[in-house]
Length: 341
Image (cartoon, rainbow, N blue to C red; front, top):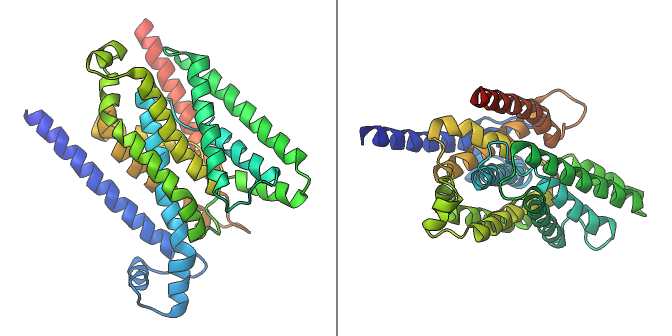
């Protein structure tokens, strides 16, 4: 009992610390830019103090970018934790299974065909549909009890297909300016985002988060095995579809306004698991907070790294995420080798 109480206190402490870290990074994010401001100055400006110029910079230019970084980072971390719990595989994440790439294809397709512009609600709608289809296709192709290799290969195939389809849509676009805009957008960026983008993405991200959080107890039961979960009243087939739907809503809404930002969903749960344990239900909220902190930190970094223009945040997360992914693969290989020996 003492051990359980200590673990509960540790989880609560971790959540509090992560929440405070997200708040601190958000204040730093609001203060970083050509006009630098301290966190105290940012707080003063947020509550109506300071000059008109400072209020415009913080409240109208930087605040939408920061809100999107928190929301998108959180839903990517939450989606990664939910997929890892669903598939009981530590390498599961939206980006590895082609969900962001497929969502990007859906959004690019409606732009290239002239069906919508970058601020239309048709964008997240198309992105959500394609994200759902990509993860659903992965489960169909790989099967229920797929091993690590099969999952990675199936995810790679879906990602490659989505990437090729996106390139084809760009090539077939009759407007070269649209193709150029799509190319920059696909790199993943929070630059020049407004409250229109926040209103475009936030409803879908919120719906996705609610759907995923509603399945936390079912994911906990599933961690004991499918037969045990079914004996506890969990319909595993329905759980898969619901989790896929939640991931599709969240990732689709995020990709529709920022483009592809990868590996946040893979890294966040791994950072939190040693602190809060392996229970999928208890991992969801800390992973969301870790995802928000990671994307905020990455977005701050791209603004302070010396360059002639802003580095795209999707590029930075990939540069960090790919080595981390390779490390995880080597760790899994050693674990399997030890198990066989």
